[in-house]
Amino acid sequence: MKVAVIKEAAPGERRVALVPEAVAKLRAAGVEVLVESGAGDGAWFADGAYAEAGASIFSGAEAAEADAILMVGRPDEQAISRLRPGQAVLGMLAPLADPALAARLAAAGVTAISLDLIPRTLSRTQTMDALSSQANIAGYKAAVLAAATFGRFFPLLITAAGTARPAKMLVLGAGVAGLQAIGTARRLGAVVTAYDVRPGTKAEVESLGATFLELTAVGPAAGDGGYARALTEDERQAQQDGLTAHIARHDVVITTAQVPGRRPPVLVNADALKSMAAGSVVIDMGASDLGGNVEGSRPGETVITENGITVVGAGSLPSTMPAAASTMYARNISALLLYMVKDGALAIDLSDEIHAGVVVSHDGHVIHPALTAPAEPDSAGGTARVDGAAD
Ligand code: NAD
Image (cartoon, rainbow, N blue to C red; front, side, top):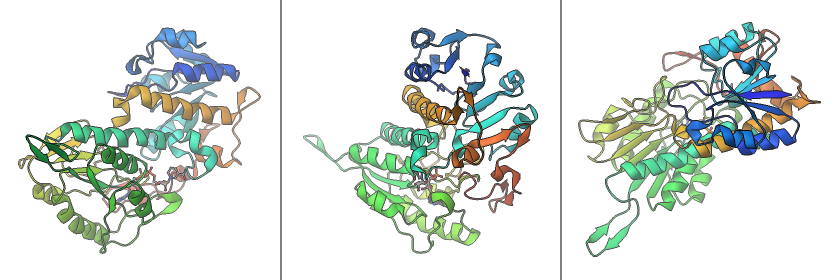
């Protein structure tokens, strides 16, 4: 079995699918590894370190020799044109957001395997769960970024020059990223409150020393597979009305809310931003081209509103910690790869829950049930795949 790591092409992407330590482990398991020259540069892993770990370094089209291409994100046009029928590509392909990519890979005869579709509630998939590993990094970085952006202290400080009160932080969405943001902000000394539509998060929030915000006007909204369901229009309105008063009382807001296969819900609207005090900071971890959790946030950009609120469009934070993110991702993708390899070759077995969860296209067809089922209308205005489709 031969795998090739290619350079990520997405703008600003600094992660790499394998780090040298993971190359050594795959080599020990009998997998030959090719690494495109410069693939690890953005994360400070030089070609020489990969070569020392047993990889062969290549430039150009040599990845065609490999049985599988390993990547963090999705193949761009050039990478797709280099894929050959029968080859596999493993990455966070996000096929639910772009079903056309799945169709193209199927038409090219490529076996597409998407790490963002791993069934996350099985204990044996924890080592493969790239969404969680990257969300942990993003949550940590969001809290650190908030502290660095805020013009005051996070902790209570009593000094000869006066006393600083601790920052009041509100975290909206208490999944993997939100919980990590809470833990990190608490370690920095902030007083943290958090809110989520899944009632099960209350105990997790409280176990981290934060206060759980209950909005009585919005009922529980746990969906399939441990995820949230999309809210109805009435619930959405009630939620926004309820949140605005709380947002106004906080110095820092971090938003992490996502609903699988749908655009992120808006939790901080223009009125809520207007209600905040000058100097407050909002970190929108949902910011993407699909829209974010904060009205007016722009992915990858920092916007300062007329009333002095700094809104950071922070949808791609894992790439800003490329060494840590790549190291964790490399463990995830290696674990999945080794799980799917039998007798030295990738052996797709759709009767296996994990294989059925991650294989998007195989033998020339799109086969993932979430992509072959008809799309449901998105009440926010677009079309989207069914809730829980990522299970
Ligand atoms: P996510 O990124 O899909 O969403 C982030 C959070 O946003 C979630 O907690 C969700 O409830 C919340 N949210 C969505 N809409 C909201 C709204 N309108 N208002 C407020 N909050 C909203 O979620 P995630 O962090 O990837 O994971 C969510 C859950 O998946 C986990 O907490 C867990 O239950 C499950 N999970 C389980 C395992 C496991 O069992 N090993 C591993 C990973 C995740």
